Image: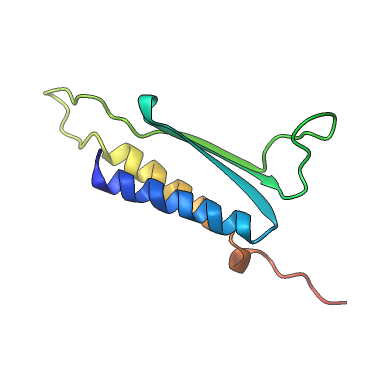
Length: 107
């Protein structure tokens, strides 16, 4: 595995743990190694996962980080697209950290 991709996936998992432990959101991170993908969903902490109260996630992303074998005519690094997508995912997740949430205005 590309070391940059591995580091990004580990940091995405760590961000998910930090966000979930803050108590406002639940972050679900699914890694599927055999198809080289990461699937992330964010729900409010009080989300009803089954039944009539179940709603779509506040945020979701599905990224394939496997790049297969490059073609001889392909000049681009095959890992560049998944690296860019994983970096964008990391930035999007950071918005859910408590320090990045809008503060409630006191009356």
